[in-house]
Picture (cartoon, rainbow, N blue to C red):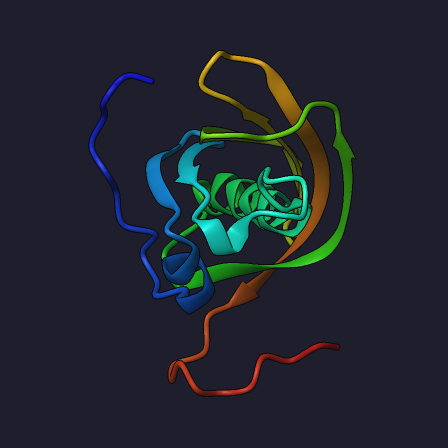
Length: 143
């Protein structure tokens, strides 16, 4: 994988920081994230746990959706469908794409590739655009 600058997610996402995801592209409806699973992120087969890869694709889709809106607007996941094609090992690259958006919804997809360029997993997702609360601790409305 070629080297490129690490960008800011624009907001603090503690779980993403804990996993160690890095953002390398977030513009024009596209995103690219990178991730290398730590030992505690592996499953019993010693490959990246599906929950970690699903989180990576969720964040890739969310950042692709957020790339088209002002910073005071965030997204929340409404639904996500995932397919696993190949065991994810080593450094991974996730690419997200905004397929279509309305005023309130974003329709997206993401794929994860390993260091050899093999497609490991693919997801589609729907996100709802939400005004970001003025205070980070404020409750997020669900209706």
